[in-house]
Amino acid sequence: MGIYALTGGATGIGAAIKSQLRDAGHKVIVVDLVEGDVCADLSELAGRQKAIDGIRALAPNGLDGFIPCAGLGPSVRPFSLITKVNYFAAVAVTEGLLDLLVKRKGSVVMISSNSAAMVGRDDYVELLLADKEAQACEFVDGKDGHSAYAGSKHALSCWLRRNAPDYARQGVRINAVAPGIINTPLSDKVLADKDLGQVMKDFGDSVPIGSIGKPEQIADVVCFILSSKASFMAGSIVFVDGGHDAMLRPDQF
Image 1: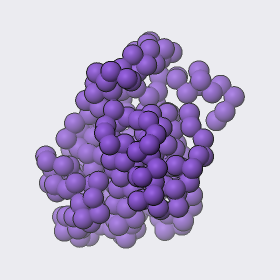
Image 2: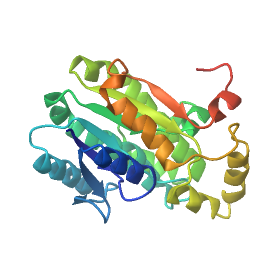
Image 3: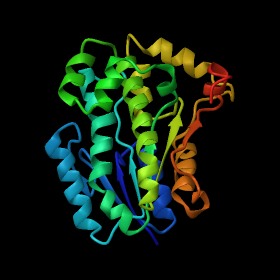
């Protein structure tokens, strides 16, 4: 069986991915703030290095897959925390584990969002892609939660597309899923937010398939992409959102 590493595995989508992989007999190394095989604060540089070192110690012979699932929603304050965890931590830990993934021809599945397609390449996204963390954090704290969240996922998707060919040449497939509204603690916090709650509820009510998603539905797709059945997938971003993106952007793909 395989060896996988996962950040943000305590609740929500990460917990569902962890359960499915373990049920299939795989070893899963979980990085989380409190409940993990490796406990680390991914908003800090030292925490990211601790995550990398912890995974390397538990999987010295390589990884079959890595899922940087840790993420913060648009209701989190300060907004710079969203920037740090959703983009910079995901990229840093992925890059720090690349040699382990090369050893076993592993696969990376990132967690983007259908909201990534709703923002453009603004100054915030450009700062992220230029690896200017301090400047990006200062910039975004003057914005709003949706811009911070969607921009972080937009930049992550761009980073993936830019790096997927080089990773593929090394035998590592890197793809992403882009969930819509999923029933998780993250979305519960947004629904309870006085500024974002009603917008989130209205958005959930408009999902074409008729309901918001379940973490297990995202995990199903993630585990498929990790598997050998998706061996020709590289650089893909798969929307798993009940038809929302198709409804909002019917002529873009």
